[in-house]
Amino acid sequence: MKTAKKYMFNPGNVSKLSDLPTLDHELAKDPAHNKKLLAKVASEIGELQWTLYAEKKQSLLVVFQALDAAGKDGVIRHVLDEVSPQGVTTVSFKQPSSNEKERDFLWRVHLRTPARGEFTIFNRSHYEDVLVARVHELVPKAVWKKRFELINQFENLLAQECNTRVIKFYLHMSPDVQLARFKDRLTDESKNWKITEADYNEREYWDKYIEAFQETLDRTSTSHAPWFVVPADDKISRNLLVAQIIRDTLKDMNPQYPSPAADLNAVRARYHEAEIKAKATRQKKA
Image 1 (cartoon, rainbow, N blue to C red):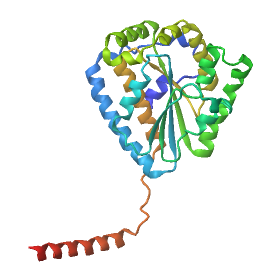
Image 2: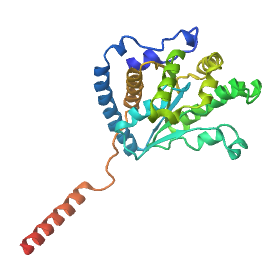
Image 3: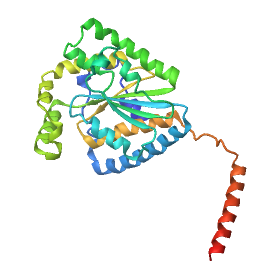
Image 4: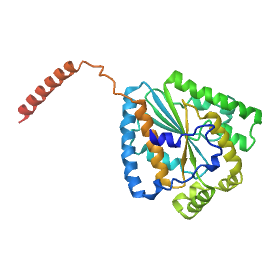
């Protein structure tokens, strides 16, 4: 769990989020090695996820938040490289629908939390309601301020009642790297669909977003649902760090294959009978 401890956000121990590095220079030195290691870690995640699915006693919820182009989609794609489609769900929360707006801000989120045995990833999440809602003044300050404690209670409920482990990632990127990635989206035809004028409009709110993330991490990084601040300027090392923290979390959860529900001796006897019949059938045909 060394990686997790290094990048876990501890409220009160950090003066400013903006002081944290957006690039792990030492780790980013050897991209070839990191790619090989990432493949190994992704395979380990796949094995642990399948055991979690078979066990059906606990679940994992992974939350990703970041500014545009920090790499949420890319990280998720690499983390899920070796998992089974069974028991894994990715949810992307967009602007709430009219139906969702008529309910509390956590209603639509609670509907998508993992059942026992499941591994769920939130690409953006309930945290939009203390980030975007705050920066763009969609609700009064008195409203979004109350939401921090409601979120803590919600995540504690998942841990206590549903045996759900919650881990949250803030992908920490520099404004210069964001601009470079926006340029890449303009020049690479396969990425044109990902860029809009709204992306540039949001850059005007950079400082307000950092301020909002700062308070969000300060108020909601808890022992049962910690935040991890992952340097995101280098894509390969970013992916590796996230994968290692997820792998280590699953290891700590220690899922176990359940005991067989059937009488294995009886099943073996039935198999032996079927084997004899199949052999006799083959001999007749011969």
